[in-house]
Length: 259
Image (spheres, rainbow, N blue to C red):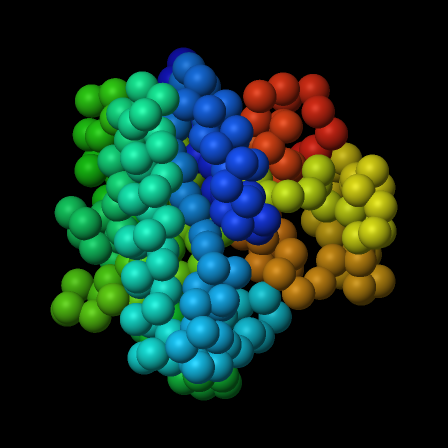
């Protein structure tokens, strides 16, 4: 029987709200099973870009990354946010280690082709070195990944944090019974974005297709859902979407993804 491993991705308003982030990190640090944390930080990067006079462009929830954007997201993701999270976890006796994909060459990506749309310095993941991640896990360390990868040739690349969490979960599923949780500021996928209690508790591929056609699921939720089903199709045992309350109490409302 495989050991359970939980991969959690945090983003949304959790990153922007210091009190909410600290509460989440406290709950995360108390999870007893082996675990990996992946974080975003797009809103902070967008705000800093605006202060610097750098335009931020998005396409279906994905960031178009110019050279200037890449410099900002690297500073914000792999620097400010990653190290603050790592330091906070260490203060709560959680032996976290902050990483980018370039560290120990854990995540290698290739620059996305410019056709049909040029996303700039965005990386599509080519490989995950699960042995390195497992070395950390077996040493009772908790890897904390930012959304920065590299191409193995000296070029850093920006990659969607949901995608990184997904690919790590898939890679680790060869050895572990892997659960993947996308944690953000909503209780789950909502039928009505203005009603926090309108959680769609279970979504399979048919339900997803229907919700997408009706525009219930759109923009930033689209890549999250695509990643969720990709994970389920590649041996990840369970995928869930919920807020921070769900981490400490698995009976809280959330969305469970199934095939």
